[in-house]
Image (cartoon, rainbow, N blue to C red; front, side):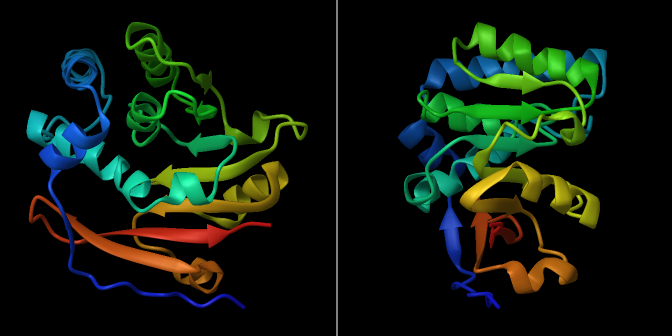
Length: 204
């Protein structure tokens, strides 16, 4: 059984610092601007989120790069429930060589992701359907998920698509049922906002 290793909860980050460190300014500004425009037409994300909120979410995606997770656990990445592209789009901008597939059931959101790949000139794949539709022949060594319920059905599909020595990086509090699967749980704050958590879970 794996045990959760809790880090010092005082890991502090600043969004501007992380973005300047990893992302070209012109692509970040364009991404935010197009996300805000799209959100006026359909519900891409909460209407209550400001431009600063979006910038903070983009920076939070970069924390796993700063933690060294992408170097320590390399390979094909499957981002589950990508929404408007967090964390996948910032990761692809920062690391263009990554092989990332974004899973998004909403056609409008999947179309937005495809448009961003083209306009930001980054390579990635958008799977516009449920994760259950991905072929068993596709294998991934790293999975990312944010604001997605990790229930038994999802966990079964993740295991089905996982290669050997694969991991799930979850943005948000780990559920009680998956706590024993966790090998590391990192708490951090961004721009002095309330602490959030990133949990690393082994799959196979």
